[in-house]
Image (cartoon, rainbow, N blue to C red; front, top):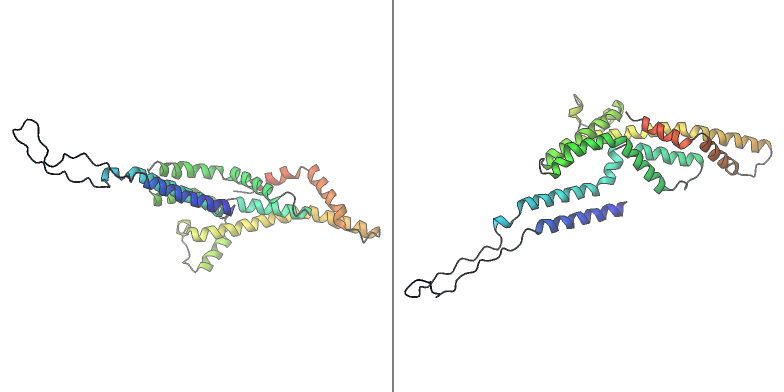
Length: 273
């Protein structure tokens, strides 16, 4: 993912430079009459002064609309390069991926499902939970900015409003007060006084807490199966047999019978306010 982000950033910078330098072409010089040429309809030859050379870069050829479009494309590609960091720190992806990872460890399978499968599932769940927020950002900020109706500063301010509203709904007051105290900032009077530098880490702390709470509930039934299997093996005198050899198939069977994936994903999506 980091390699892909670097490639996107380099490609965005290169594309921006190419688009920006495209309009800056040398204007063709107008043809001039030779010195000492004759004018038609005159009795004698009259020397015509040389026409001034056309400037290599005319103001009409600077292509201001094209240059502004190139800047917008470069900014958009830079945002795409920073998308992984924004995805982890400002969306529901953090809570979902942690719960799915804890489920894998609770079942005793450290490599199944693979990281790619869990990440893809978490991305789709994030898309479902964040779709109203992303739609608002697209309609209020991204499309007007790409159309040239909003400046960069105004576009960022308008685009952050739906994200801030989402993060405020998921953030606990205790975590927000902790971050404000650690940053040694003045106590805010309302939510508008809280900067993004303070809101984002508070949101991440709240997401970690919620993810661990859900993960604890997920761990309990699997822990119970491990205890029962270990007790039975001890009672039968099979102390040399690893309990995971027996408990792992039982965990998988129980998870499939209760339709665990549907229950877990439904609970995850419903846990967001």
